[in-house]
Image (cartoon, rainbow, N blue to C red):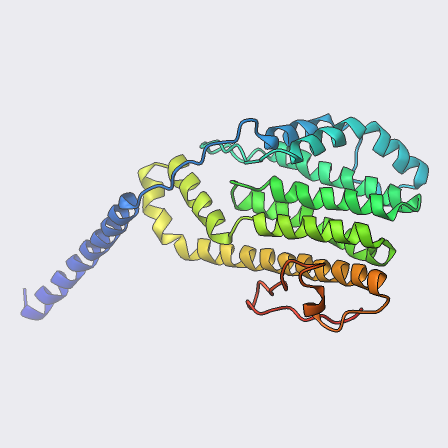
Length: 300
């Protein structure tokens, strides 16, 4: 064997050895990281009441946007008990009941929560049809509140469901701002400010997802591939995180519009700037979650 071929053989042997060492190092590093503590569930847990309320729905609510007044009235009446149970759950502290198994999440449970939000929206549309915009605002706010509470302590998929619920709630609220009285505007702003402040940070969602996956998938093959998939996971979370911030921006813009509407009704003219709304109509000037800068008021 020549010296040149001998060196080539050594290199060929070192490549797999280096790969094995790299994978081993990643495994050791991953295993050495402490697991985040499992947060205790509140007792009673309002989340359980929300899930039960979703199962109580008596009618198919997904077609609410195609119904006439009488059909909507029947839909809302048939689901009044479910909506009452949901509102009871929303008054309690809520936290997702996670299971550390591969068959989680429970998609039927999530489907029930989404339908519950649709039932709130149907109730709001019925109130609009009956010229009760202030009641409609409460129903739309409940849909938003449901999204907020149904994601606490959950995984990425719970957060995506939350975004969908909040989006439908804010979009319907935005359409009726000009029909609300000053009292309803102030109450809705105060509720949205509280819910916005209570929402989970994106870092909390990432930590919950990481802790759940590490407790659920413990096989060696998963431990080997998990560090290698970290780039793909980061990209998924980055896209979802941006989507969450975009929805949060819409919520904060809605808060401004509601506060400005209340100010206009009270004062008889538009506010000159957001500073005019603080602290009587807004606790503080809302920030753009995408840039971290203060939002600017533009009369609609």
